[in-house]
Length: 309
Image 1: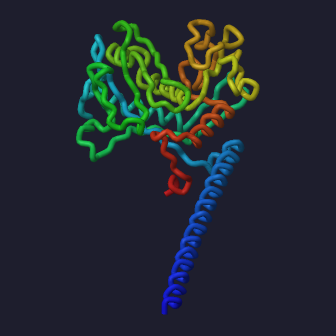
Image 2 (image 1 turned 120 degrees about the vertical axis):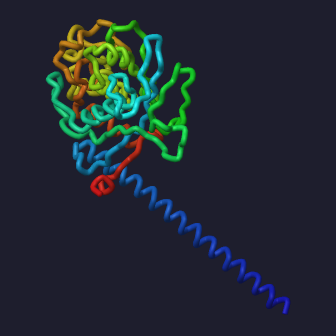
């Protein structure tokens, strides 16, 4: 009887081990299959990017929030849609986003580039808001007395756009800067309120172009007139982009008159010009490849089937 019970115990242990082995082996196969699928997806994406086969590529949404910072000169106000004042921040912000997307949907020709990427960049920007967050009553648009008082409800899940005025009233500047080159999540647009209040030449459309420039930095692109630009021997003419000297030695810093960019004839997004609505194929490939592999939470991928639905 003892021998019989012992034999049954051994069989139970063997069966249990066999079952565990089967589960482990199945899990390993699933993990291996998943890894192969991810690798194949990446290879397909890179192939399609290099071939500029955009119809087979996903589209990426950049989720953003807008933060208006009050200045000594005043600031944008939180107005309803019926408020037609030029300093209604909610209306100005929506116009900004709409114009950004009009640029990204239809990249243009630039006379200074040796080759052109024309049409849809496969990138869009949207104001992000969680309807369950009662404190977000203005749907991703915020108003603060100072930058120190800013609260970041969505943290690193959005790219934060700060609208600030640093300079004198009625100086009508168009300036901005980004937090870095590796998908950090802050950029600054300066003097938008001054321009709106005083009906200067730089409206939301100008700041939309500037946003695209600063976003390009965040996604890894250097200035089009940078001496070591990766695309300089491919399809960028950095001397024409600089238009005064052969090039400038800083990837993202202001050249402070070293170049004479504005009359260069360039429309390049990463140059200094009035339009900033063009990318060369090399620039677009670099930017889009970086989008494919980033882990930034504010970047959302939409596959082709999802877009077509």
